[in-house]
Image 1: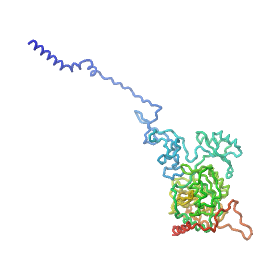
Image 2: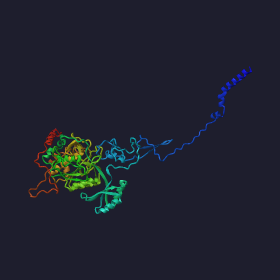
Image 3: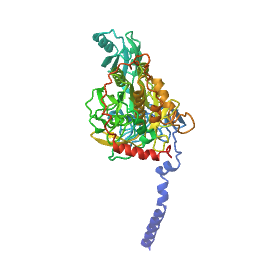
Length: 560
């Protein structure tokens, strides 16, 4: 009994201990520390630290705004945009146009950028500044401002003609320049040099320093010029030349064909061996000293003026001075102030009566001087209005008052879609889808006010054959006074006086009178080396072109 009572006590005690064990565990020191202790919360004031090595975060959706984030507020700081802001609207222009998506501003996708591409790849298809490339980091390095109107780091300076070569070299060294070229220009009566900046100094800083030198008369940038054509694929064939009928060239050629008149074509290389230009190129001058072969643009311009085989130019018997002033580049043929000055100087000194300038660029002080000097010597100057379209400002040399500016028309006698226009336009001529010769005996269909100007240069040659004593302003008056009105009645900014009319122009010119009663001969024309290199007049005119001209003449709006 005692043993059983003892076992019961042990069993009861064990049960009680098992039941109370959880509560016993919570009543020890550890439990008191967990439950009874008031937690200590340390609040340390957060002072934001700004690292000077980390730039502000940029929100890609906010152009030109850098957003710096802090715990308490957002500070928005407007940062200046990097690069050059275009002065022209970013509309779609021809790829060969001045300041309309030049090579340096063209991205890899061909789109126009609002800042120059990275200089590491030389432009064109490169990476835009600040634009993240695939697999690469963002490049936010500031770029130096780029003036796409000019040749980088080059200056054109008029120098005291009394300086010796050693003194000129010392002048260049003194201003940190390398002399590229130097020559005397009789057209301006000046010695003008081309200099290149040899370090990374800003062009404006160097220009001001050079202009302040006592041996320097004037300093300017070396501006770029571009040929005014539209790119089209070369084609073969012999389509009707609608320009012949519109300009009434077959009728005019029955009277005159440009014999003994000299036109200087300042352009790219001309293929003198092309059948359309046989016996037409009287002389050549390469103002850039290149080894390039003939170029499509220059050959086409010469053809618009003087073609005489399968095709017909506006003055098939004229003689041409071929002045190469434009060299091929990745962005089309280009030239500069200094090179064009050399071309103008050569043309004037070698007897040009007309100078065709189918190129365009900015207003340029030295070229303005050369144009004025050429006009003062009795030379007729004709230029393309430009292909920058309605939103473009005036381009030069066409906008110079001494120059006859020519806008372009199409087969429907509407304004050529890319043609510039303005109050400086003198008259218009066909410039869309013109069929012309190309190098290596080929042919091409091209567009541009370049070819409009070339047609008018040929018509001016017809007028001068009729009366070589005419002055430039008289030639202008005849061309504009006989032009066929297009568009709004009277003169307008699109077509000027209207579309050129070759037959009306030559018909309006009276041959110089010979005073037979006095027995004296008529005054001789200004002395020029104008020995004719024309084909014999008894040679039949190209039948294909003549037949097409007659057919087109019947279809012309005037005939209807």
